[in-house]
Image (cartoon, rainbow, N blue to C red):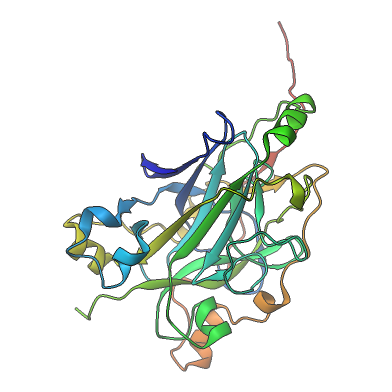
Length: 324
């Protein structure tokens, strides 16, 4: 069962366990410079507004009604990251244009361990992009379908799906009970964070330091007899207004503007969690800036290198008692 509340997708599995619940939201953020330098995690600038496709059946593009799900607006070359929250362990597969963001393989509902094609909540608090090597991702950046930028188009040669596809599996109750016995208390610090309308897909952007963690539970831990799936469509600002009558959020600041203001970037440390290697297929894709040059369209706007002045460390750690 999936609910939409306060611009979050809430996945529930009451038939498995009363605590089997997690939340996924889609965060607006800075587009980091696409210059092959590795950057820290950018901030969250608030959730993208989510709307139910079923509330706009007469005005959404053809084909959406079959997929159902939700939709959100993004400007061209705007970036996003996914925020995961919940204490009940979940295995979450994320694809962009039906290309798995962890492995670069095509979409399938089932979980795979070799290579691992999913992330684990709550170990993985965020996913900012395509996993291209151990400890590195390329940021999710929105680009119009049909122009060759998206991961989907670069790997399949087609601009068919776009958007994001998500499937969630809960852990088996027996493994949940075991994890509670081993639980240590952890606090995560949040990231402070007139052409025809076009559907959007996600393309690889700048390099960012982020680890995708290995599943410590094992494939047999997940309750694969149940699952929930959601299709997340992405539209440009013009189309969003035409469909909903509402204006999308304003453009986010550039990385240069944000850094110049002295605002913080972030580094996340997962303690003793082991990171995955990254996907060769995804590592071989052209980033937005490179593809733009190859297409003869000039340089990517607002792509100047920055040097973050403030970098805050987040992650697992011991609670300091302090003075009483």
